[in-house]
Image (cartoon, rainbow over all chains, first blue to last red; front, side):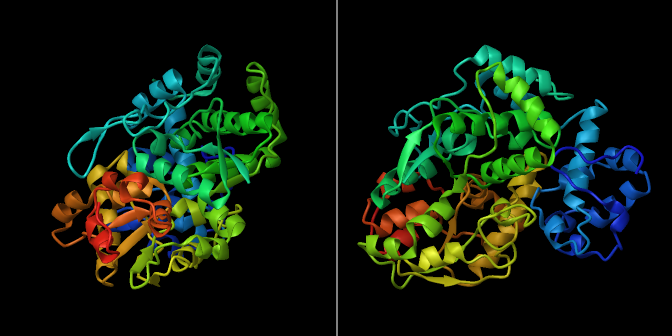
Length: 158
Length: 292
């Protein structure tokens, strides 16, 4: 457990893992490729974080929390995957392309995305206004909000 | 009952049917919705790679609610978990609370972590109650057989307070039956919609949605009822692609519980945004004798 540590909101105990596999039997991503939460837990325990970070497995997790819920020893397989994602960002490794636009939208509007036009079943384009919905209200003092957010963004770049 | 209404980014930026139907039905049941004077993302999407940014974003919304002296009503499972997790984290780690308040004080805000956060499922089931909902039914859904999808973040992890049981949730089914319909169990009932994977591996995420939908189809269900805008995006919006990727039938009418409730209360489908659902909801409507 060299580089891995529990950050806020996470409790992880890879040393409690008995490799029972309950986490992996309920994992929806395990059906997609050769990733198993139990393997990630073991590798984290053995100090093989760099191998996990390089493998791409971290970004196959669908965030469903089934492994975390079903682990009989509260090892926290999901929390370990999330702690590894954080380590990945801290090391300045290239984050999935999702995060750049996310960070810039957060900094610009306060929200993860701006309202879009959607299509109806009849292939008509509609938006909040045409549906009679008010525009979302973001932070009143946008400048101060952005400064605060920027100060805590860490390795994520807009 | 009065609540600050927090639709969350996905409902407010593209899943308009959820906000439309919630605004339509909740006030009829005595739930007054007050718009937040200002808000921001709950922070969940950035949490894994930047926990401090998440804590600031989630904490800021809670601090605004505290200033307004009202509890929060949220539509999205992700927002709900995000706020509960932050409330837990600042109790565990007073240092984190101090750090957040240092940031928030620059905006004239203060966080204590005392505001209550309720998902629309909790408001309807625990506060409005099944009996009052039964009384509000003008058009019974008698004869419809429906399936429930709670969504992962609403029921897990049980180490935090969640609205229903992690392995055997019941509340959504009870709410569906309150409208006169019956409910069907299915093997993939607690499985993921795939949404958490959509940002990184779109095709694989849609396959997950497809597995779930085909499990529902096999039961002969008349429709799937959901509670989260992310789940809706996958299960309602991606059926055509899921069908192509899996090479099997996945078509099932999918709608929000607030839409189903509104139909039973006698609202017109368009008033509830049903023309924005992309799955074959006409099938469900014709089963009720209603046209779009």
